[in-house]
Length: 331
Image 1 (cartoon, rainbow, N blue to C red):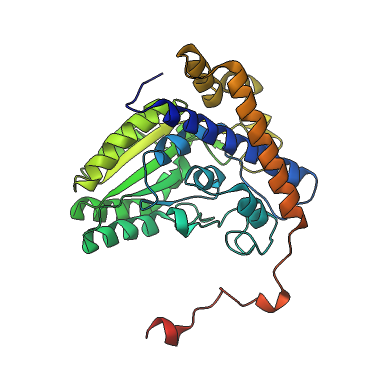
Image 2 (tube, one colour):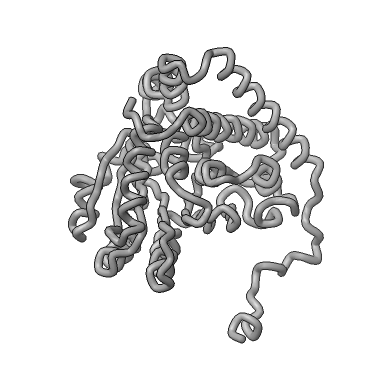
């Protein structure tokens, strides 16, 4: 694995965050299968090194925008289990008072401008955030997460053009998990994805999205340069989703093989790889790691119980936070 300039506590925190994401998703999947969670959700399992590697290079003042597959980004940027599960279950103690659900979680306190169910829908928001930083003379950076399928959206090319012209502090992070819903990326995307950014004069990189240290090392460098006005940047992160496009996608054998899934799970799993590295470097023992895993599992279980028992928003709030008070907003 690639190394990076960090200390033991940073390494252990990155491992903890990846396990927190995997544990959260395992519990969310069970909530769906037991018919306790409304609607659909899109699992992030398998892609944990991307969210953690990037978000560990950011501060609370830095911003992110997320996608319909956004639980991992939310947790990596600082979201807690209780409010996350409450949001998934539509409870009033959720991040959006239960009104956003799985695909619309925002956490302003940690710089998360929100997940977006529209494919590529947050690209304009992220670029606008970066423009705001430049106009205000702030030094925060915005990271825009999106999938490989979103590179077919014209909005990406409009905002990359603007970001390049104005040298905005934004990093476009393309999570290439190999599939756009149910179709292989290489069957619908001609040429190189990074070349699309390079066509606008944007410096582009491709990195192993299963190697949290490689992702973090690159992101630290790009964030530091973006703060100096050298942005924007584009990163293609090669990764893999273990579940289907969404939790109801159970017939994956129609578009990808079980052998392929087995190979990624057994030979390229980001958590297994990082765990082995931590042990080999003497940073943590197997017993210490198992204790950490057990603690996270217990925290998640308690959060699920809390969310199941929490209250739903009152029916009187049905219009609240849906419409803006125009007179007040324009005052």
